[in-house]
Length: 247
Image (tube, rainbow, N blue to C red; front, side, top):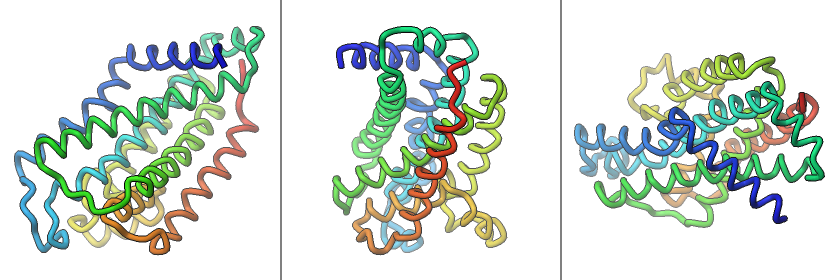
């Protein structure tokens, strides 16, 4: 366990030293919130069921952080570690391989949590956002969405031959998801033809689940989201385990 915690700390520091990853995980979502909050404010509107624009934007942006870490930061980091020989060196040490894998997952999860906390604090302090759900339920929904996308991220890292390829694939997948799932732009304001695409995007179900739980929906209203995200976790995780390479 001592080796695990040391490795976790090192990997977290390495993540924070990467300016692009740190910016899009920790800084970008609060900045976007401040920008659109300055434009639209948070006055309750019938369009959002009596809630303000920032009330519905904050839980949606949690999905934005999840997809950024899961499909961009994680695949690039994992593929780069393999490409540079870091994984091969870890395999040669007495440290159990599972310790490295768990610390890797924990480091990315920690960065995701930090980004989400920064987002929520910005929304609470500046816009006094409303929260009507259960903290425990939202936390479970967040962990389900995050681990599902982490599984997809490791799948990309395992299949990509290089870190550059992982970056390209991750961005090609992530950016359309950001804008067609309701994570960046509410689905309610998107054209009907665009909304037809959203059910085929995994991030749509992350945003829908977290927003629903955020505003107090029972889990029984989100069986579809649960099934899709559990499927991403199980199928993506199983394939990622088979394609994982130390060198």
